[in-house]
Image (cartoon, rainbow, N blue to C red; front, top):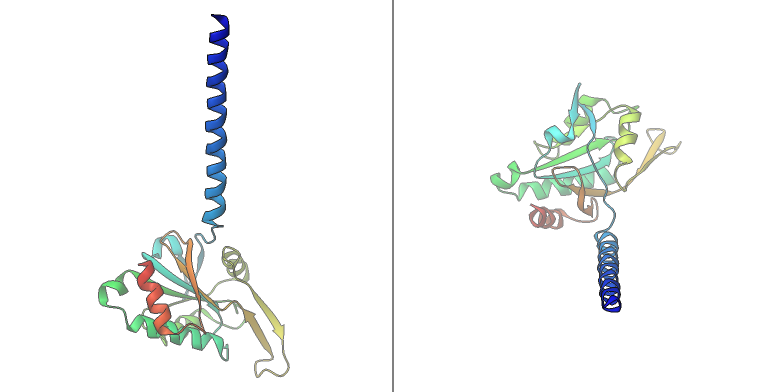
Length: 196
């Protein structure tokens, strides 16, 4: 009788260990397959006021890092995004926002950034901020920028920056991305439709 109880207890313990092992293995695979998450909430400056993502977010938000004096990549990226927004209907436009963040805090003033963004589409939001705010925001995303002295540039400097339009959900988490300058308006439009 004791042997039967011992065998039954051993079988139950073995079953518990197997279930826990399979659960842990499944959780590990799920964590690996879902990939790393990036993004989050941030506060910057819109014109002369604080602008916080969590209070201004739409269902879908597109975020691009650049600067207003960028000679090529930024205007191309914002033109492509503007073209995509022109293809959206009014209901879609109510649920999507484009955010342009200038990484050139030394030269781009808040009003200049806001005006620059609306040149490409009237509802585009142009943000700036202190170096600390910009660096904190960019650290949330798989993005970077480097300011380089450049005597051949008419500005005397240039800024190398990530050329990605990040698609963010309402919590600021990256759910997709495209190349701003290489993917045209149609590609960006299709991505917006997929993620709305």
